[in-house]
Structure formats: C-alpha cells, structure tokens
Figure 1: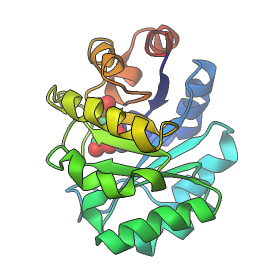
Figure 2: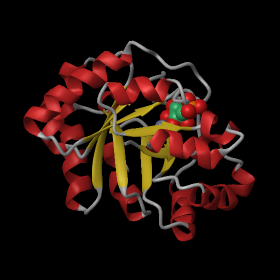
Figure 3: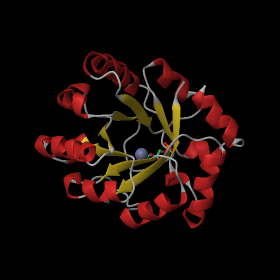
Length: 216
Ligand code: DX5
Ligand code: ZN
C-alpha cells in the first residue's frame, strides 16, 4: 500500500483547476507542486500566487517541493500559502538553516520534508531524521519531468528506511522522478511510502486504474 502524489508539473497549466479536480476524481492522495527558481535547478515553474489559488480549489493535501536556493527565506510564506507538506532540499542551504527550516515548518503546523538529490549520500541526512515527517529521495536530477528512473537510488531508500526505523519510524519516504507502473514496484520493495508521478500519471490511458495500481 502506497500513496500517490501526481505532479502538476505535467498538467496543462491553462486548465490547472480541471487537472487538479481530475486528480481528486481519480482517487489521487496528494497533489505534488514543484517550485523551481532557475538557480537551484535550471528551470523555472510556479510560486506563491499559484499555490494560493490551487489551495482554493482542492481539499487534497498539497505536497510542495521547493527546488529553490536558501529556502529559509520562503518557507514561512509557502506554509501560509497552503502547503500541507513542505519539502526543502538538503543541498540548498547551510546545515543550520536547513535545521531551522524544518523546525519552522513544523512549528507552523505543517509537515516537514527533506529532499536529497541523487548525488547526496544518506549520511548527510542522518542529523535531520528526527526533525522530518518525510524524506524525498530524488530518483532523477531535479528540474524536469519525463526523465528516466535511477535504479541505484533504491539502495538509498532502503538504507533510509532502516535508519528511520531506529529513530523516527513514522517518517514517510517519498520518491520523485521516473515513477511508472514498473518502477513503482521496485520502490515499494525498497521501503517507499509515497510515489510522485508526473508524466506517467498524465499520460496514462486510464488514470484511475494507474492510481489504483500505485495504491495497491
Ligand atoms: C522533477 C520534479 C518532479 C517531476 C517528476 O524535478 O521534482 O516532481 O514532476 O516528473 P516525472 O514523473 O515525469 O519524472
Ligand atoms: Zn517534485
């Protein structure tokens, strides 16, 4: 049993409300919102005003993935704009500021997430494990949808699950990038709780069936 968080990066932005309601109708668990600043990653997507408007049209939990430099500057505003889960990248700020981000997110009543790029080892995450409600393991280089799943990230999810079981068993592990009906099986076998999926969800001929496949 896993949760699915369709990523609106692959939605039709002109019809965003329609596509978000479609996620609800198809039984999706969360809506994944990718925020990119053109500096931390080589792409620019959406930000605070769009998140605020999404908040008005859905009750589904909003899973906001900040791919921005020095997120400490913005976490408060993203929580206020409607994030239920707010994830920052470990590589995007100083260790002190990452700790402060996670604490601030939780203090504001939001769930705190920490994301690791493919090149970032599990050891780097260990000091933060008790401060997180979710660890997001990137299974592609962040920045773009439609890339191929990196199989070697499965060792990372497996090791993280073991480390979390020691100190924070409630913490969820999420994967993002290249998740489809085949790779989701490998993820489930390696301790993953939440699957983000952009292109595979939006291209699925039967999205409700796709959602069920991930959830079963
Ligand atoms: C990429 C984003 C992902 C993206 C995944 O940096 O974080 O959320 O939407 O897209 P797919 O599922 O197409 O790999
Ligand atoms: Zn994402």
